Image 1 (cartoon, rainbow, N blue to C red):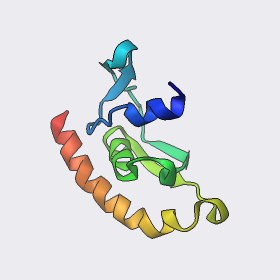
Image 2: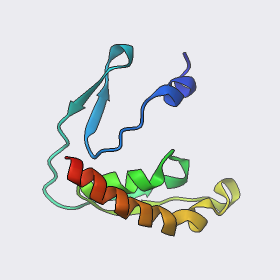
Image 3: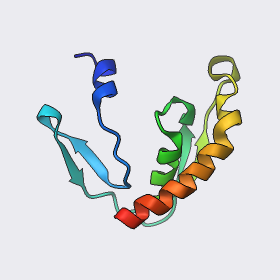
Image 4: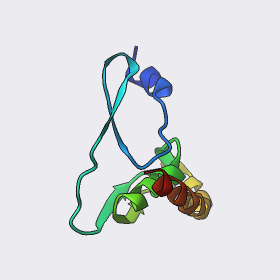
Length: 102
């Protein structure tokens, strides 16, 4: 199975936990790194993710206080600019949900 086809079959976890893939489709929950300060992600490509809002929620739940998304209008079009406000709003809602589950 190619990496591309495998990625289509991997589950999406709607939580802030860290999941490590094992054999035969199993997943382990592992401890998140303990950060001593807020962290900045200075090179993200939100428009390439399956669920950008969930990624932003996970960032917020795990101490990432700043995300700089990279976009090339020639390659990516205006997707990031058009959808960023919606992703931020959905991410805020998702953050409340996933923090409550942990």
